[in-house]
Image (cartoon, rainbow, N blue to C red; front, top):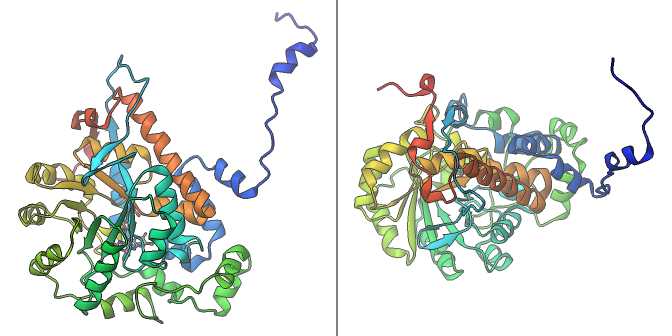
Length: 410
Ligand SMILES: Cc1cc2nc3c(=O)[nH]c(=O)nc-3n(C[C@H](O)[C@H](O)[C@H](O)COP(=O)(O)O)c2cc1C
């Protein structure tokens, strides 16, 4: 029989450590989010459906995106034990400069739609974290304003080739002048992917007010207040547009772009060049031969060709084929620091995050992007320690295997 006694005051005191309440609802919201999926849930509550779906959605059946995420979820980590992991170094050289973390912010178009702080939130958060920020051709803040917002940030500029070459080159010149050090040429948009959620939602640029959008707006007043009381939402580098995003892409972008055009762009740009949207070993090899500095294995977050190769599956053979001739970067499907570790272990020099930071942005503006980066950094450092490695270069393919059931058939 258990002997019992009355609790005494000094027994209770150590148990009663009340935390000081966090008064700002935004801080409370963000602090309660422990994963990128948590941020996504907050984002969904706070953002009108058409804007959330534009961000969250992908092309056709959204199979490319779900497979890419599944491939990361289905890795198996193999830890080494009894290593000194009191210190971990998450920094590395990427395209000629040191970055504090092995991930940077991917180019995303129309970013002020998600939350009014848009590109400014992204680039200032990147500056604070010591990671690169990529501004999209379809940005809603100008090249010069992005540069002025974060003079100390490392900035990359993403280029879509337009039918009007002179205008593409005018943008490139502005980016070089504003101190962007890398040109990232996106090559997987000869035409727009079929973003069915956008079509179903009647999503247009600029957003239109219909009875349905108004009904959906009522529970999300902050987003609408922001939209209506800040600089009108427009592409900062393009003429004004009204229509769907797909229609805009199809009008502007040039389906005749080839390797020759790439060589021409390369000659115009003084800094490093990376090519984003590479999806076969042959193309990766050809680009390395053409002298590009980095290849970004990506299927555009599943927003272009559906059922495209999973970049993480493609990674080992591309790293093998390219060797040290070009850096291999990777995006699509990264939702945690563990995903980043898996990609680095299989030879990616660097990774990019799209939605992971946009969920943070929608959940809470600049502090939300900070929170997304913090979550990924914490997961990355903890996973490295648990694997018994103290620097990124120690990560090797043996640390990460794919569960057999998801290994692609030969
Ligand atoms: C809302 C949104 C807008 C995007 N806009 C662009 C763009 O303008 N240019 C580009 O090269 N890629 C764009 N992308 C693709 C991202 O750069 C990146 O490849 C993709 O988001 C990576 O997948 P993840 O979202 O799973 O991280 C966009 C992605 C999203 C989600």
